[in-house]
Image (cartoon, rainbow, N blue to C red; front, side):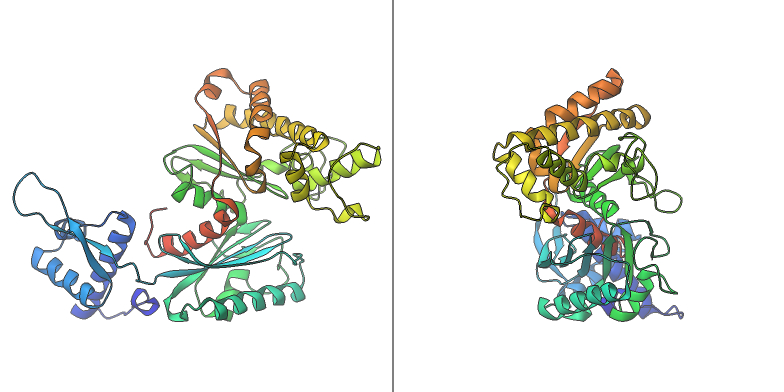
Length: 407
């Protein structure tokens, strides 16, 4: 499969032209999602009907296509609808590298997950040793996936921190090499690698298969350990001039007394996110407040996931901390609503499961800062993609490159 899409030649022959036409037929059918007819293929490729029939028949013989039914027409002969066969294997190797976990998946061109493995016994560090751990884990997953390497079209990778997606450079982590991170992995795995920030990948998944699929203007919040934001404007993900767009967590909406990891004071990410939640919880416990959270003797090893679970189970302290956080997030988002006039705000990440607890305080915060007219035309929704959102978005980078999906 991979060689089929990588068919390249400097000599234009009838054979090479037919191969490229077959590739375009597969791309057209894959993008449609509904199947297409021979007349539709011929119109899209600007080819004659006999040529279209010949190419479709050959793709059927090669095992790529099958007949999915007949198209309804008012009169005349009903043309056959062709779809990709269910067992056609176009796959992406998808990798998500976060501060405290790494996830690897094999994703097909319909963005279904065929293999998935996560390592939570992982801490992201900017060291050669950590890079080696990442490489070894990816290789182990590929070996165990059961997918033939020739069926993997490329690697999509989402990593936390600053990323220059056009050059494949990670500027925050693994920045000690004399080559871009994408190029490094491309050489190691003999695959084209498409790299972007993890939140941008999550936003891409929301845009293609999530709540933002029908929105032209949306803000996608990735609320987990940190606070990330993807912007969708005019139905396109905004990367910015160097790939750094969407840094809501470093806008000055937070506590001016706190110093952020970036070295500045007042960053919203100091007040909103899993890291901030852990800090706030530990501070309240030291003040003697009570909780049902069974925290370890070394409270610094507590994970914010446990605080989220306690809140869902009715813990008063955890609920109060999350409601305060929701108000601060909403107040900051109100300013962004005034600036960008989105029709939709999606809250995703680990915090998305707190829908009922977060919705009211976020709305209250929004009301405190947003103008009424743009706010009245902006909906708040919670992502349903779960932990697989970023992974599927990274895979979409691969399939978008081969024009197998509409991005």
